[in-house]
Amino acid sequence: MKQTETTSLVLLRHHLKHLRLPTIGAECEKVATRAAADNTDHLAYLLQLTELELLDREKRAAERRLKAARFPTIKTMDTFDFAARPSVNKVLVAELMRCEYIDSRENLLLVGNPGTGKSHLATALAAQACAKGYRVRFFRTTELITSLIEARDERNFLRLKTALAKLDLLVLDELGYVPASKVGAELLFDVISTAYERTSLIVTTNLPFESWTEVLGSERLTGATLDRLTHRCKIIETKGESYRLKDAQTRTRRATIKQPGQTLDGDPIST
Image (cartoon, rainbow, N blue to C red; front, side):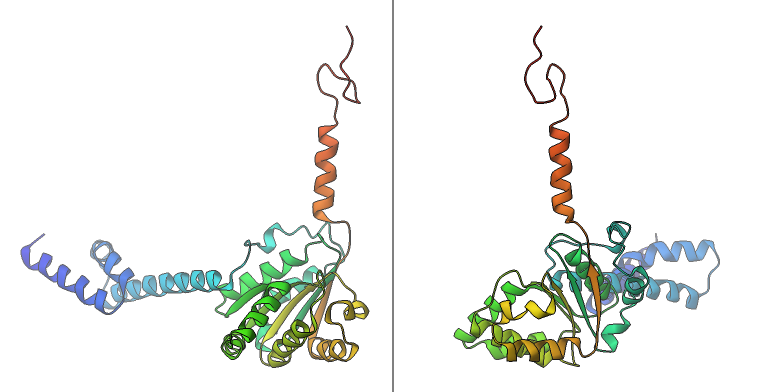
């Protein structure tokens, strides 16, 4: 490479770094070599570079949104067993994966027994929203209530409430597993009320609606909460046996299969 070309490349990468175009800086020389071999004009060369920069920027932004959502584990719809959950409307789930419900400020309620895939569906849908550019946050409901109470006690409640209000989608997982205190239920209602027709909610619960008073306490508060959640929402029921229970039973059966030198009940075979 000529000295002038080397100097130009160094200066180009310096300028691109300050312009915050790292992918163009990393790829410009390689793409230039390919463009010269293909006799590509300058505009086509520039188009290739900007497309690479844009794709990489979108990828990094999606990764940041995924990290900011704070999912306990990442789940995808590809690994959800629809055959084992015929109650789950696969067509509706495919529609929800387009994330139009978020643009319409609609909610999604996933109702079913523990271990039937509610959290899997909620996480997969929320992760898809991250990939499509939406701001998402995942909470186990008890964790959110604890955070709200701590924020109130430390006089940071308004800050947390403002941060939640900036989201496009808020996931409340496992509502119903632990009853909330009176203060906790009221703070949770405040969040749900603020989100009403502004931020979409995905809520997973093991309780039928008539039993929500066991968690929220007051019938008045329960009625007001359900009124806001169900006004514009879609409901998915995940009926069937717990995946975790079924897996535990399978492991137990495998462990009791006759081993060499043993009877079926585990006693040594006499010789």
